[in-house]
Length: 292
Image 1 (cartoon, one colour):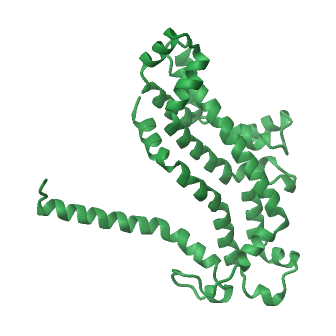
Image 2 (cartoon, rainbow, N blue to C red):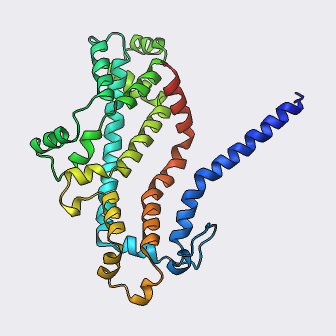
Image 3 (cartoon, one colour):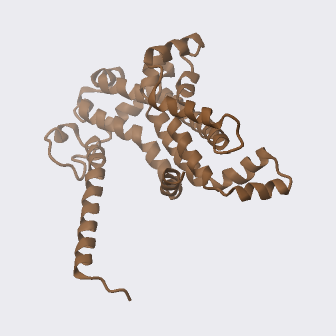
């Protein structure tokens, strides 16, 4: 049995205490707005800390979800997030795998081009003009394609691929496998951790992307959820009136509770997905960041 000194016990105790306080500091803001959104508007306005709802009420959520644009925004965000994430992970993986191979001609040039985009980009106006000239304004493509491949994601995935032994591919080639077979049947199954990590990063980005909708979409029926929620928050009183909510019912809801409910609704899908890929996340982030 390993004995620990008094100094080590004190250090571990302080370390555990610090981590508990840090966890509370990170979780409490989300807990606060969740409890606030579930509270009666009049009681919530008294301020202070929230550990449980004050006068439980779902009025704010009825305002957010009952908005006519909410379902269309949710549908658009789901389509963009699912399609964008799948395409992004696929193209990121194929690009990263290609530049991780020494036999690729022009590997240094391609790596430089990718790295260059991390430091410099065209800017907002050239990006808008490019999307306009390509005829992609008011289309889902304008929400997906501009962010399809990220240089940082490619470098992380490339570092992961460099950690896979070349002997594995050589053995597969001896058995008759070609490059596509090796990539799809050997490399990708071994890369679940980094694929899940990059997939989560990309999904969170697409789900939270607000600016692309404002920049490229003018048709409100094609707005992503974040833009719809922003519109609801900015016009909370109008939203109440447009839904025919009675004055008596409006006493249970306020602009602040609507704002809090909007944030919870926008965050909830990512929180639901995260536990299913959490076991891959830490491993993928650490390995992809350290090696190479």
